[in-house]
Length: 186
Image (cartoon, rainbow, N blue to C red; front, side):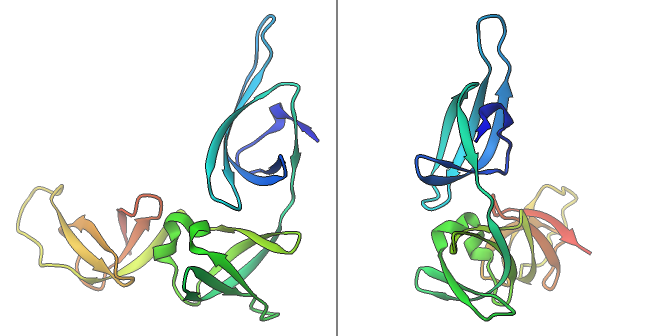
């Protein structure tokens, strides 16, 4: 058991029998008769729900070590995503809810890190951005203003707003959290 002051972003902890990933932790030292407090934002690894909680300096938590394995995404089966271990061919299913904003960007044969706890797949590590090819977009307008955007359809069928200089066939980086264009990849 660790003291609340040792809580850090990225840790996996167990509280009240549930597993949580610490998405943000901030320790504020107390002064005088005030004791320190840790403000934490926690994401439940089974339900995906996010909660905020304050921990007193004397509170303790249990840090959990997860077994991490690289697995290959195979296909969608209804509301489930099927992953396979490339050496053992063992398959695991994760709900699309656990993927959050990353679900539309998942491509067959893509390799991602899957976290296991006591043999159960509990979480997946998704990248912050993905690179996708532009399938179609209208011709550029001859406007000097670089802030004018146009619609582009990506290889996964998603439509995003891109700058005028982007053309079909270009590789673009998309922010997973917002689903917005970030930059052209050279």
